[in-house]
Length: 293
Ligand SMILES: Cc1cc2nc3c(=O)[nH]c(=O)nc-3n(C[C@H](O)[C@H](O)[C@H](O)COP(=O)(O)OP(=O)(O)OC[C@H]3O[C@@H](n4cnc5c(N)ncnc54)[C@H](O)[C@@H]3O)c2cc1C
Image (tube, rainbow, N blue to C red):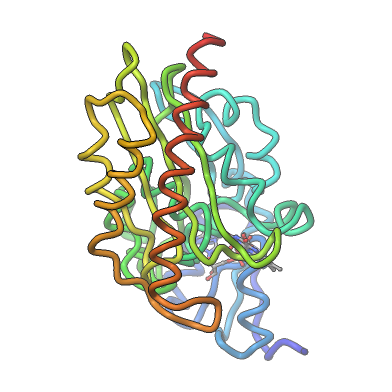
C-alpha cells in the first residue's frame, strides 16, 4: 500500500532534530528504523504532516559502559546491540530478548530507542526496560528530562515523551556475574509479537535470591512488573515449589485483554507457565555466569 503524503526533513545533528520537533510538534513523527512507523503510515493509522528522519544523526547511535551503567543511544540498531560484547556480558536480559524481535532483517533496521518510543505492550524491549528500571533521557527545546521506566509507559503505544521531545538514550544498570536472565514468550510463530512474554532477571548470593525482577508483556496496555512474584522470591533458595508460588501470586490479580489470539484466561495460564519457566532459566543462567566469573 502506498504511504500518505508527507514532508520530509533529514536533520544531521541532535540540535537540528530538536529544532524541527519544536517547530512541528504534533504534526511530526520521528523516523528511526521505520519498522513500526512505516506500517502505521501504510495502514493510515498515523498521518503525520512531516517525517523527521534521524538516521543521519550519528551522535544518536552507540553503546557504552561506564559507572555501572550501559548507555544505549536511541538510534542503535537492534542487531548492533545483539552483537555487542558489552550487552552479552553486562545486560544478559537484553541479550536474551533481542533475538526474539521479529527477524534478522527487521533487527538490522529497527532501533532500540524506536521500540521503546513506540511502546508496544507486547514487545520485548519495553518489558526489559521495565524489569531493569531503565532510565530514559529525552531532550526538547526547553532542556533535558530523565524519566524512569515505570513512568515512561503511560498507555497503549503512549509514552511520557512530549511531542517536541526526542528520545536521546536509554540507560540500563549493568549486571554483575551473580545476575542471570531469561526472556521467554509464547508467539504463534517465531518472529511474531508475543501473545505473552516474560522478562526475568535474578541475582543469586550464597545460593539465595538477593534480587528478582520480572516484567510481563502482552497482559495489559503497558508492560507489567510482577511485583508480587518478586516479593515471594527475595531471600529464598531457587526451587520448583518457590517458582510455582511466585507464578500463583503474580497471576492472581492479572486481568489481561482478550483478542483473537487468546482469551484472558488463556493469557493468564500462559503467564503462570512462563513465570515458572522464566525463573528456572534465569536461575540456571545466574549459576552459569557465577561459575564463569
Ligand atoms: C514484520 C515485523 C515483525 C516485528 N516483530 C517484532 C517483535 O516480535 N517484537 C518487537 O518488539 N518488535 C517487532 N517489530 C517492530 C520492530 O522491533 C521495530 O524495530 C521497533 O518496534 C521500532 O523501531 P524502529 O527503529 O523501526 O522505529 P520506527 O518505526 O522508526 O518508530 C517507531 C515509533 O517511535 C518513534 N520514535 C522512534 N525513535 C524516536 C526517538 N529517538 N525519539 C522520539 N520518537 C521516536 C517514531 O516516531 C514512531 O512513533 C516487528 C516489525 C515488523 C515489521
